[in-house]
Amino acid sequence: MNFSAALGVAYPELILAVGALLLLVWGAFAPKSSTAIGWASVLVLVGAVVAAATQPFGSAFQGGLVFDAGAAFAKVAIYAASAVCIPLGQRWFARRGVTNFEFPILILIAALGMGMMASSGDLISLYVGVELHSLALYVLAAMYRDNAKASEAGLKYFVLGALSSGLLLYGASLVYGFAGSTVFTDIALAVKGGAGTGILFGLIFLICGLAFKVSAAPFHMWTPDVYEGAPTPVVAFFAAAPKLAAMVLFARLIGQAFAGDAAQWQQVLWILALISIAWGAYAGLRQTNLKRLWAYSSIANVGYAILGMASGTAEGMQAMLVFMILYMIDVTGFFACLAALSRQGRSLETIDDMAGLIRTNPGLGLAMTALSLSPLGLPPFSGFWAKFYVFKAALHAGLGWQAVVGLVLSVVAAFYYLRLVKVVWFDQPVGVVDRPAPEARAIAVGTALFAFPLVMAALYWIDPLAARAAHAFGLA
Figure 1: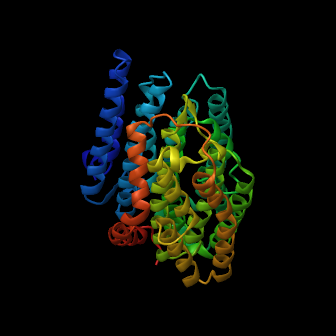
Figure 2 (figure 1 turned 90 degrees about the vertical axis):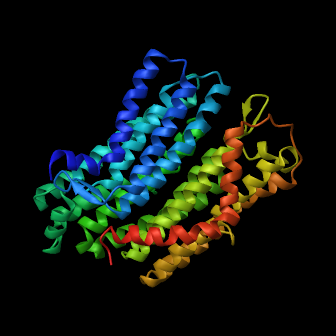
Figure 3 (figure 1 turned 90 degrees about the horizontal axis):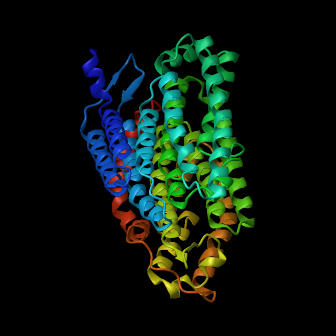
């Protein structure tokens, strides 16, 4: 394949890279045009969505970059979720007197890295994609420079992120040393002939590094502090697209490179899944800050997605993809609710702040109720269907008792979701909330409507697309 044809495989990434560079130059010469740069960034992401949805499949750079059904499915979702967060964040920062034109550009760079993660075909592109998106996220976490908690969040995320990068690099070096190649298909041939101890150790290090990126316990230590300290729209971004990108990369790594050693990584994954679900369920019971609470909720929900992957089948990968898409929409909507709510200019972030919200702002009160009942898994909300897919795949793969444990722990986590619903509906209001930003309100209401009833129609398209994407990861 010649160089121009290879670049065609990376067409969405080229759109993002060129768009980010041009907008950076625009912002450097006209820093006050942050709103225009934000909407231009949204258009760049829309262009990347169209490119990812329409370009033909193929591979380039000796298998280092792969564009298949799995990559297309993930990129469309990642770029769309990234585009939603730009207007949400711009209005939030503007209301606090912060006009950073870098915010949308950093989201473009993060989306570029996430696209590479979804298309990674070898260990080198894997690492480049992870680091490219991580570096942008570190800066985004500390974007609100006048806030000490935001600076602390960015520093903690950077320091702990360096640890996970070290784990990834060490694992990649072990796999390369014992397999003789960094390309997933070549590694699969080496593993098929009998994975040695060195390759297994390398795989464990890679799993640990990726577990940090998806905030799976016990590698979750950064999540509560970063969620609490980072600006609310940035957390909405953190909790959605980067998680999907890392899960797709996870699936591609184990499905394409280590499918021949499934008996080993399946045990690691279901243990990781149950620890995450348990930790997220029990630790969340003590939280009063909603951003910390949803950090533990995200840890638990990532555990459910990993349980789907642990099945080691295409059905399990399909369940993981469906789960992540539905979860992304729920969590983006919930943080949009938080971004929309303030009282006398102060952000509302605790459970007590939501007292009587259904009376002071019925629209956002109903949206927050729906977006709390959905991750709880209450039928017929989208979170119920997400967990239904995961538990069904686990049962079909012989992970019966693991599915039962996950179901029981979801009942434990129901307490903190229902506690929030009780406060919203039955507690006395503590004051009138400010007029919400129209962008945040629209996103919150739209995602709540998706949670129910629109999800019933959306699954008609999501389900077959996820099944097609899952088969691209190499598992039967």
